[in-house]
Amino acid sequence: MTHYTLSELGVRPAMLAHLDLETETPDDLARVSAVHRDALEVLTQNGPARLRHAPFDDPEDRPTVGDVVLIDRALERPARVLPRTSVFKRKAAGVEAKIQLIAANIDTGFIVSSCNADFKPARLERYLAMVREAGAEPVILLTKADLADPAPYLEAARRIAGDALVEAVNALDAGDLTKLSPWTRAGQTAALIGSSGVGKTTLVNTLTGVGAATGGIREDDAKGRHTTRGRTLHRMVSGGFLVDTPGLRELALAGVDAGLSATFEDLAELEMRCRFADCTHHGEPGCAIEAALAAGEIDPDRWRRFEKLKREAARNDATLKERRDASKAQGKLYRRIQDEHRKSKGR
Ligand SMILES: Nc1nc2c(ncn2[C@@H]2O[C@H](COP(=O)(O)OP(=O)(O)O)[C@@H](O)[C@H]2O)c(=O)[nH]1
Ligand SMILES: [Mg+2]
Ligand SMILES: [Zn+2]
Image (cartoon, rainbow, N blue to C red; front, side, top):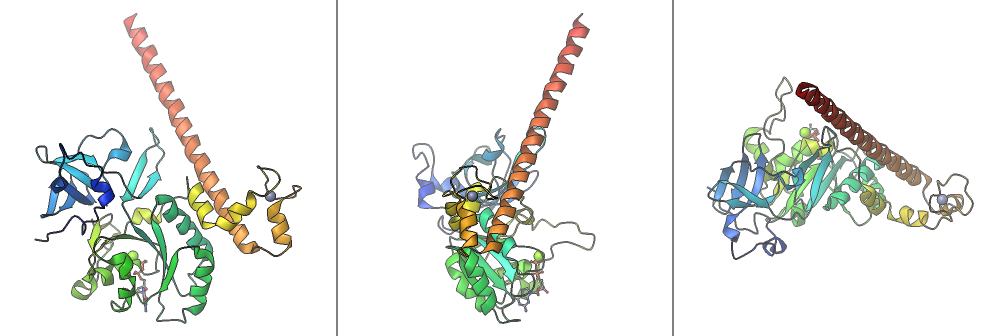
């Protein structure tokens, strides 16, 4: 059975500071490795364990993959979730406009793209915004560096990466992936994000050493049914943990204002120099963006991508709000019908 130290589990000193040492002990801390309908899988200092779900009202209080929880030993369930260093979440609109947590305490978001025609700056910028919004550090991984000269792809990625580091790798080569050790060593937790075919499964296999033994982890069977490997924490040979969640890839770009501004920092700053705070940058006097475009000071393609992503995020935010309002209105209607029904029965 695998034993872990708290630091290997990814428990940070800052998290320990949140414990009330009068009633709580670090020995009861565990890392959530999988969430099932009927149970939680956790990793403790003494190895893996299963916990029951606890009745947390607020969806954001419920444990998700990567969470550090304090175990209630008597009830064999989490007593509470410790404050998260980062969280990926999805706002699923429904009767209560539910928040669905996807992964927590991810240190590094590996944004995966390939050194080929799949390389699309707009896609990278989208993922950069999402990772930054979640509070994780983005690192761009350019796979298939063995199949083409990675130099032009590295250069293009670095132009949009901001403070994010960019690495070109051969995802099939374990030796080559040792250069990722700052983000994959013990105590580190990374997640893989990227579109289909870029090499995420290959990276999971090589980083976890699974590929060599079993010929690869199968994501789906022939009928497309998902195995439980989705949303789980994989131990990497270098000691850290890896999350490869299908949900991370499907995240809609919503509620990411801060992430977008961080990814297009230069343009977001320039926008603030327009004369009007609500400048649309289309013909208004004193527009700093139009002036910079005319002077060739900013890349027009990059500006267009920023505008497009902002529109997409605004549209998704509006749709969510609309659906939330609609479901609230519907809830009110139901309650009124119930009230009237009750009154008429009482009569
Ligand atoms: N030569 C080479 N092939 C790769 C590399 N990364 C991925 N591949 C291949 O690209 C294909 C798609 O990879 P996969 O991991 O399934 O992509 P996913 O859809 O992101 O999970 C597979 O045939 C991999 O073997 C790489 O760095 N070098
Ligand atoms: Mg895959
Ligand atoms: Zn303007």
